[in-house]
Length: 276
Image (cartoon, rainbow, N blue to C red):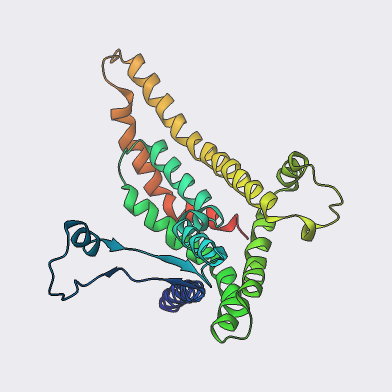
């Protein structure tokens, strides 16, 4: 467990370092003039009011390359936009979506409302995601991040190499019917194998597949708890206790059932095994 946590921390530090290298590389191609303020000249004659106002103005200049090409500035803005969207991209392109939805289904089915709290569920889903995605992250680190840090490959080649392991993971988890649906929507032709499918098709197919699988697992989790609610409600009605809410009586039985069958271990184990 300690080795796994250390590997996750090293990969996180490496990703942050590479992000800094990207920003520095893009920033070096553009020239951003510092904010300057003109100093008042020491002249014997008193300047006019217009000259004094002009000396107090702050001028800000932005130039790219030789001052005529804005490609580097736009490239820098694109990188900053990608970095700001990186958390959402990592959440949607990994196992996080399926895990967090299933965990919320468990809490809703038991009827415990805010127990466990959202912070606990999110943290558990995050560490389970690192556990599941560790082989993929390790391969990305070996084939893309390390060679880029050693200046052995370019940024474009590093991106192409780094996308391949994540692409393979999404394809393995996505049924052919979902991929076929988006291929038909995109009206793509001459698709012979998975290598010909672009990321713009694989990513939405993977997300839709994760949502369907998560809701299917959530439905199966709901079934035993619904049976407990029905038994408790029927018992209360037969006893004439219609004013008593069935959820108040069924909640302890749900928690007892979940603890007796070791529910967390059972659910997490089978949930993780769905990715293998």
